[in-house]
Image 1: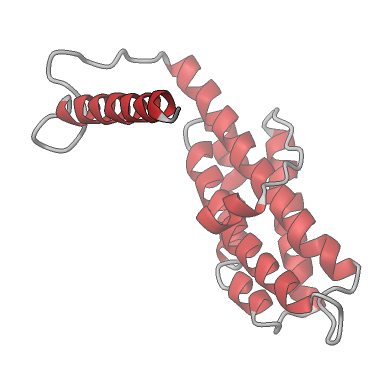
Image 2 (image 1 turned 30 degrees about the vertical axis):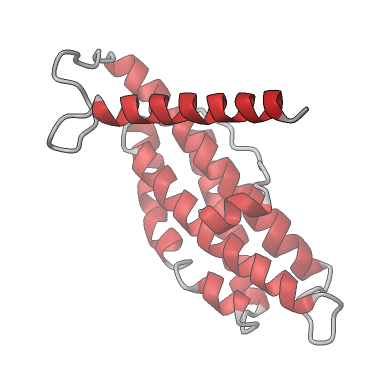
Length: 183
């Protein structure tokens, strides 16, 4: 009765191992993972700029969503206040969101460098983004003030405006909790 499901599971496991082993074996000795017989095709500068804008929007949108959903909204709802139900878990999520948002904003700034107009619009924001570096820990520890929360919102507003000035629209995309932990 169990012979067929077990055989299927073993066959699937063997196939996965063979595919994984084959993919690892295709890499070259320097660890770059590319084969010497193939070369990646180059992209035009227009395509590279479009990819830069797309990546910028994706990263900035995730940062904006994380800040709103896990920091600003709970703060406004009073869930950071001493004695609030679920305060500890809310603070931990907010701390993770702060670290995640900082990471995504750093990535967005790097992405913006691939587009001339976008890089000029975002360049003045790097100091504001850098100022967020330790706020995630401060929030997680329960030491954040209203000005700390507003700092997150102000940076996101500035990034949205810079994107708009460069011709891209940033909308909030809320990451799930698993993304916050891996950000």
